[in-house]
Image (cartoon, rainbow, N blue to C red; front, side, top):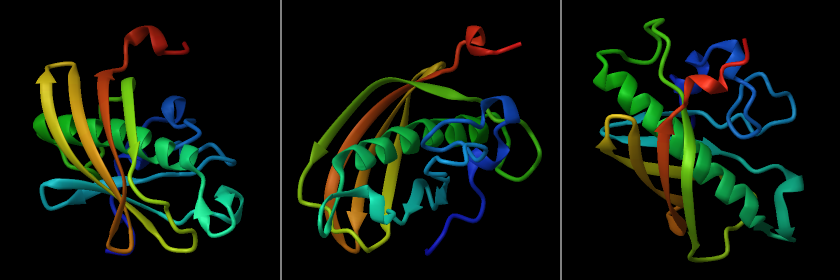
Length: 159
């Protein structure tokens, strides 16, 4: 898989599509997009030249952002499916925010190759989901992370 065709972030309403990591309306953002790959979630991202830590390697903060947004997107797409919907059907998906983020850097991540975040999702409460993510560069596992995501409180609404 070279790209995510149907991403949950494409379904977020405009009021909630501004995240620096995954917001489609944030012109300067990363535009991470999360979809299904079988029963796992996937985000594919090509780091830009400005995402270097040092020549040849990706900045760790970008990897942490990828794990973070992949986690909240994975929780959203999973709850959306649990609620009887699939991406692209027009139903508004739930939005999640990060309650905790844990990242473990396993190997230096080479720049110049697509990164693949692969997630496994576990519901731990009706409003709280845990997503474990592995980030690969080619076939090399470079980082692992865990996000606990909670359904976005209504107080976040800007109305």
